[in-house]
Image (cartoon, rainbow, N blue to C red):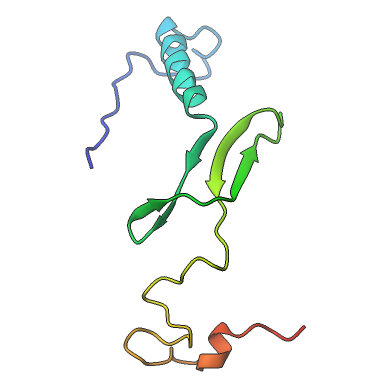
Length: 113
């Protein structure tokens, strides 16, 4: 993954300069704000076994300030989604041993209602 390099600023924002900031601050702010607004409402998939998976059920996340602003859409996983291959139904690890301090029924069992 390429590393991002920070642009060097030609100014230092301090309490003394924040009442009259340089134009560069406004220009860079506007560019970053436009990037953020362009990514609003993006749909994110679930990553399962290294692949992006889309579900039929979705969860919309909206801004608490304005419910008209759709921030992102996420996939809603459900119980029919298969468990990862490293987890066995009896709660044991792939090597067949139960985790120390637990038994197979205590690590996965639901508490009684």
